[in-house]
Amino acid sequence: MGRRRGIMSDQLKEEIAKELGFYDTVQQEGWGGIKSRDAGNMVKRAIEIAEQTMQKGKS
Image (cartoon, rainbow, N blue to C red):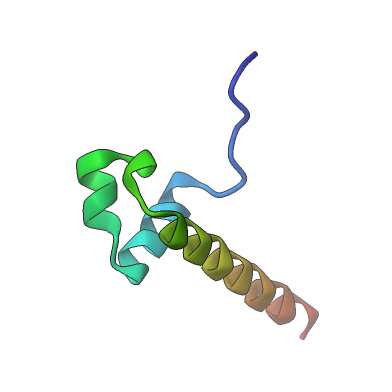
């Protein structure tokens, strides 16, 4: 069974990780090295960005 391609681009994930302050961990240990809380915060931030983008499109 092949790996599914993620919805978020690598660039977006990296930008959010930098913004939230755990990008160093990603660089040293990969995405598997981040805490569950950090992963949840990353998803929450991605949703906020998507909602803001959608709102701009409706304006």
